[in-house]
Image (cartoon, rainbow, N blue to C red):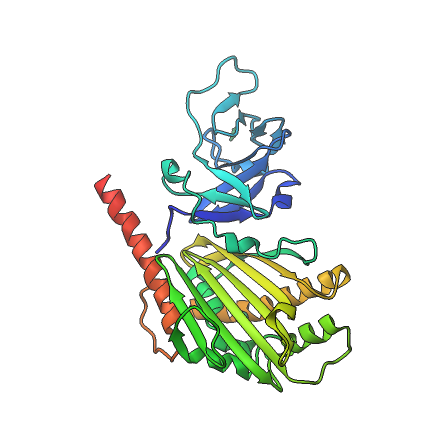
Amino acid sequence: MLIYNTWYVAAEPQELNGGPLARTVLNTPVVLFRTDSGQIAALEDRCPHRFVPLSLGRVAGENIQCGYHGAQFDTRGNFHLVPGQSSVPNTCIKRFPTLQKHGYVWIWMGEPELSSDVSSIPEFLYRGDHPDWDGGYGHFESIQASYSLINDNLFDITHAEYVHPGSFGGEEMRFYRQLHEGHDFVDQKTTYSIGERSITFRVRSLNMDAGGPFYRWMVSTSMGVEHYAGKVDLDMQVDWGAPSYTSFLLNARPSGKAPADGAQVCNMHAVTPETATSSHYFFRSVKNYGGEELAGPFMEGVRAIFDQDQPILEAQQRNIGDEEVLTRKSVAFAGDMLYRRARVINAQLAELEKNLALTS
Ligand code: FES
Ligand SMILES: [Fe+2]
């Protein structure tokens, strides 16, 4: 089940520096390009003359030029010129609204008249925009797994102990299964709240001797020591927004220290369906400790963590095949309730769109 009437991340802006970019979004081949004056546009990636992808062409001033016979189209998809011809055909290519926000190029694939509603772009995707924080952006293109499986993966922190034992995974993740409704941190438990199209949960783990190695690294680095050997406290707040946006806010500190003095990391994730069974995954990670000289290794580490998730997600998808992930039945563990609620929210949004299409 794909959801169309929502904004998706289409690209990182620098991906358009080298000319037109081809990217399939929601089963539709799209060409994204930036004109000489800096305007960004997205059109169906198919020339109406002889169906060559426009992404094989080039940007020509304020237009995109097809690489086969040189026809040019403006940012609205209208013919601008046909070489050697005094008039242009009165037809246009499908255009998709775009905007730039939170360091991304966003695209709207649904009903164009609904695109003025930008409420589906969560503010939590831009946490840590502060001169004292550093980090960066990255993405994985065409992961062979449904956006829904990636959503599930981000909700399900209990996999970290087994898939990411060298970084995020320690026994503290088991507190995730102790779910209680509420908005505050509760020691050694997870509290959660569910909105109309959002879910938030908070996990507080105190006095950890072991814990995920990454949290100890956060504490050691923020203290400027090689290896902090004492106990660690960890707060984790996870915010999810439909259909596929997630933010992890981590706060690690020596046990007993106030959270306000903790080392913080924010990992933000935006998943864009390529097809029903494949996805583009964009991430942004920032930290408030260790200085900018550690930003490079920090980002490499973040990337390496998703490198561990990708084969699992793709193997899952191969086992599921083309069956609908959102409604597929599976055995549930304690704690699975949250990602299942997210699935219900997404299934309802998809259903709502179907009904709207039937009545309009
Ligand atoms: S295919 Fe594009 S101009 Fe001919
Ligand atoms: Fe993971």
